[in-house]
Length: 275
Image (cartoon, rainbow, N blue to C red; front, side):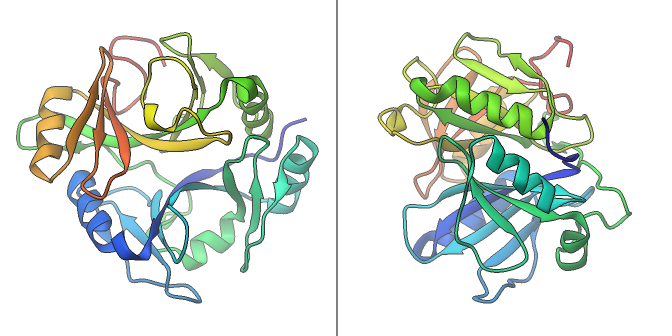
């Protein structure tokens, strides 16, 4: 049994208050996106606003913890999405407001939110009636790039369970990645974010988190020129963490790890492959 249609995905950067400002500055430079006004009961939420298309990256200023990421799954029936998630092994998580906060079997935080509520309260979200995927940004060198993927770093013992959970919840096909330690969901082409699953314990990004018992996550960018994109990020204060054949792991000035990958920014797949 799968849940109701997921009409949009939003990735939240959960950033501790003491490093929110520099983290936002960095990700604005990297994406070329603007920033909305702050909102929320504690003035803790803001949206990265792309110059075209609809918003899909947001920030939550947290008062405790190390930070991380969570997902909002937008749907016309969040109550049903929550019920299906619980039947598949998710558990409820405390959260105030008009959202249904949950945690996946492996420990990934996500919320089931109403498409109508989102469009009423979020700037640049579904403003044309149907969400539109922003185009990749084109930079002065001529290459393009886009933050387009959230990679869930999953301990090997729970990898199969976690992949199956997200595939059944969304109804999207689970597909093998380019390397044996990766799988991903075949998202609808109009959605801005792809979900990738990395089995921890093999050479891959996020190596500093391999001993975690719960699922963690990191952002990935797709680009038509990895070398040019890496240099652009270095100019904004990032540094190379690890080099790999298909990606480069970077460390943001505020410490977060993320990856620049040689994937097509439009399709999300490796250059020259079928989506």
